[in-house]
Image (cartoon, rainbow over all chains, first blue to last red; front, side, top):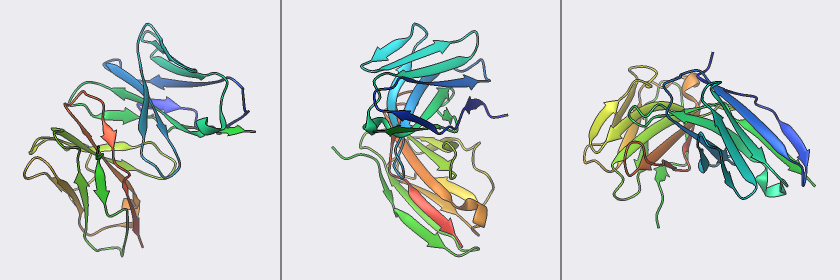
Length: 110
Length: 113
């Protein structure tokens, strides 16, 4: 079993839809949590950090449930440009190495 | 400003050949990471440097993989006697410190024939 698990999708949604991605992690020692975005044949880019209190950045909302070891990302009013793979990432703060999930593919259609 | 630069962008090699992949981190970033990303998977950690010291190489899949960062700046990942399973994208990332946000390069897409 992978340390960070995600549904690979693909999620195919129309423009304007709300879509939610979930992720679970198995190591309770994990300290930091992130969502990265990766476009086809491009490098991963940090989308947002995830905090226990939940945090929002425009149309994006991230939630963390430490008790359930569960992370979520909600995208509201989805745009064509949101089409990408979304990577759930944890950091055990032991040297800084990032543990990535498989990624969830999102395709937003007109 | 300049981001993380990796070269070559693409590399094709025959099975059994040695390859060397280069990473030029953002100036001033002391931490440097290498990751391997197979098709359809998320990146997987290979190794980590703080300045010139290789502090973690637990992710290197075999002794055919070797990384160095002799002057604490540019890093090279070398793969000896390449195998087909080495085909992947090799990503380099750098950060100001080990738990600071990591900035990734475009990667080197390695294909072993």
